[in-house]
Length: 88
Image (cartoon, rainbow, N blue to C red; front, side, top):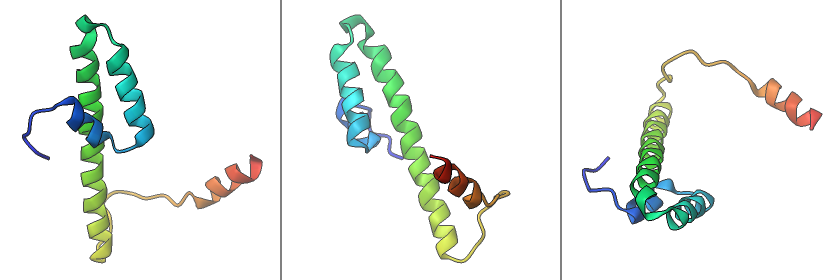
C-alpha cells in the first residue's frame, strides 16, 4: 500500500468495480455536507480492505505459482456449489 493521502478519486480507483464506484459516488453526492467526512471515512475503510484483499490474493497466487501450498486448512466444496446450482 501507499502513504498517499486518501482522496475521493483514490477511494474510487481502489474500489475497482464500476458498480461499487457508482454506489460510492451516489452516497458521496447525496450526503449532507455535515456527513461528508463520515461517508468518506466509511468508504476509505472499504477501499483499504479491498486493496489489502487484492494484495493477499496476489501473494497467495504467487505461492501457488511457485508450487508451495497455501497456509491453513482448505476444504473442497465443489460438490456443494454443484448441488446449489442444480437446485436453482
